Amino acid sequence: MPAERKDEKILWAYGGGRCAMPSCRKLLVMKQPGTKRNASGATVLGEACHIRGENPGSARHDPGYPNVNRYPNLILLCEEHHTIIDDNEAEWTVGRVEEIKRDHEAWIHGLVPGGAEEANRRYYHGLVEQLVSDMSLRRWPDISDSFIRNVVPKWFVDGVRNSTLVVHGAVWPGTIPELEGHLLNVVDRATTLVNAFLEKTDLLRTAFRPPASQHFDSYMDYMKFCDTLPEWEDRVNRYLFNLTHALNLLADCVRRSLDPEFFREAGHFTVVDALGAMSELEGRVYFVNGYHEDGP
Image (cartoon, rainbow, N blue to C red; front, side):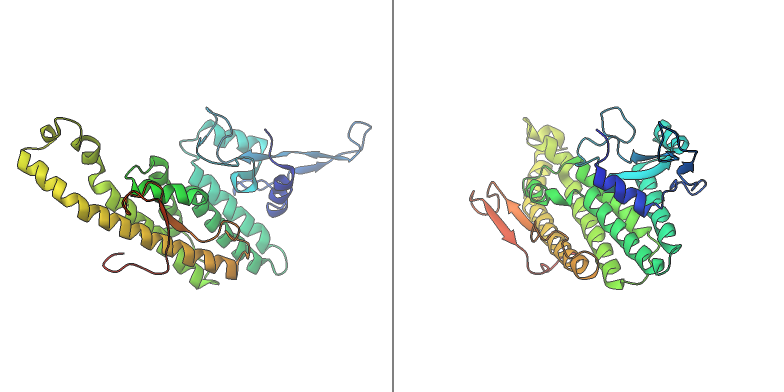
């Protein structure tokens, strides 16, 4: 399926009608004499290319990524560089292609009067959108519930790691320092949560498969492991609540400084406990209004 028409227009506008590859950046429209077949007198040489491939087997395909045909997943390239990035996805990773797109659009905005400020806003917006995409934040109710049930999907772990690399590697414009602080805070707290969760997950996969004690040097070691689980679960849950609060602070900042409609329809980030693991099997939704003590 091709890109949505509105999103393709947005892509061409923000991309200035030029190939996003920094070594190229050629104009993607060539003037030609008007003909009956080509009454516009111009030929389009560029393509709205998928960052994450649309179909299984395509370059950088991500089965968990929604809306592959919308602007955040598109980059404007000439035919040559479209082929280059798709033929070697090991080199042209999602993160690298998204960085090329952000840098190109910032360069385009810097060429027009008043464009430097707008370029900075677009750069911030690109970082926020990549965080939302990598961490699948529009699925946060399911993600928070998965932490409560100790079944966190690998794609979330990978998304946190990629977001952390991108945000910590960002060249900050410095025009919205509050937003920069919130972005760093979110990825750092997400990393803390993921690392804490992974401490015991390998053993959890096997510890309760009979005979459970065979995975430990002794039965006493097994019992000691079981005794540590409540403290570990409490710590993971505390980090989860703290990350949820950090996401709400970030969302508030984005609405004030960049996009008034950011997650407005979805509402506040909450912690969902669908099976009632924390409340005697009574499903609940927790609204988080601050950081929990004794933890990041």
